[in-house]
Length: 155
Image (cartoon, rainbow, N blue to C red):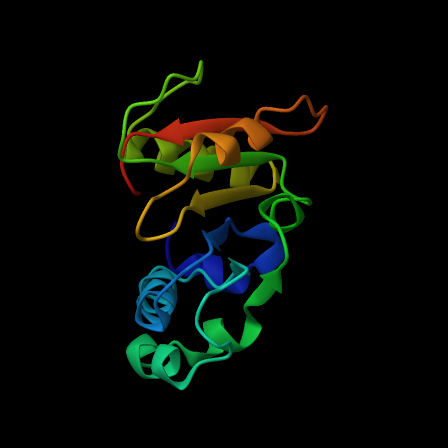
């Protein structure tokens, strides 16, 4: 993805989803990193800090527009509801049968999906635990319009 992504509406960009973020700083840092690449679709699932947060705005350092447009969701499944392909990040090995790819492979696939107008998301778990197996199992439920990939470490 490049700054050209900014000309695409957020619904056509990968949605970056933070599940139960615990620190407002990290929400701001995520927004800042996203805007550096022209990405603006941020979704928060039951954020732990009071939201919206002045601390997140401070750490976003110029990416306040991403925070202002961020949506809050009650569940992970609600946050990914309109996405056809979801990339779940994890730093630990799993006992689940899932295809595991590198961040570089995920980025290439995200670009290819964008070219085909397939709606994607990149899913990050809580800072302390990351995504748990129950989160990933929820993604694995049969859906005619959704597939899931996992990355061995954060993208």
